Length: 363
Ligand code: ADP
Image (cartoon, rainbow, N blue to C red; front, side, top):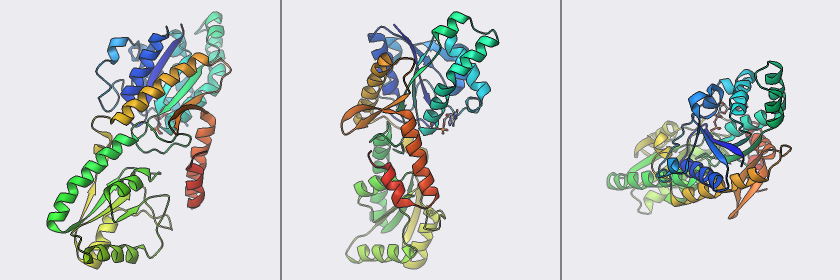
């Protein structure tokens, strides 16, 4: 069988463990040798004990845990060619030429670069006398499959990313909790949720929690948003409501591109309507807790599909991302996804919000 390795990289998300478990078990089931790479790209660059063979039992009792048991990291070394050369050597040493990368768009962009560079890295190691000619021939190319683990749902090419559903559960629980006290004290709560470039969590949380207002990066409000907001809140109070909930995505901005923060919104409400108003930042709580059934299943399905994809790939195959389209697991070229995700960012930077939303939609 083939040798393959799985690693998690970038921001952690709930359901990554389920994907790791699935890759290990599907790999072993199909007769492969499966390795863990601990601490993401850092472990790949450092090698040694960071690359260890996995077995069936090592992934027992992890499907219900948040985060990732094999660790994740941000790694400077891998951004430089020198670091990627070390990573290449460490993988070749163990005959690993199949990789499953579970991470966000940064991690997958790095994987794409690695794949493109691989043949030249192998050549360089051969010239330096670090590997034999046989090894160089045997490991002449690398096959890579990406799985998107991110709570933000910010990746083009998949309907959902691993972790988003659970993060939404955490947000909804927090909003529900805050509503009890808001109701008792007739307060307005302005709640910040994660999402630096993507308002998915903010928008869906607002819909699911019956929020009065929501600010997201892709849809900056009209310039007179302060009046619109206050009129809306005043209206809900005048019809008998005792509380207000306003959801603000981390990356929310106005039409000039200036941040709209929970503090700014709170002060607008306080100063205009004189409501008792509190700002709450949910922060890393959103990454915590046990994964939802949906994320466990998504991790399982994507992990298994990743192994199947690797089994079918040849040294010529371009890297792909396993994504969910409707309710189907599909393989999409990694390059295409990365390019589209970058195009969305470019559109947002250029204040072309409608274009950004269109680009992010399903292909
Ligand atoms: P995420 O994967 O969650 O988007 P990051 O953007 O921080 O998180 O990326 C995680 C890691 O992936 C980085 O610390 C770095 O090691 C690697 N990486 C990201 N972008 C690149 C790139 N363009 N080239 C090489 N490696 C990269």
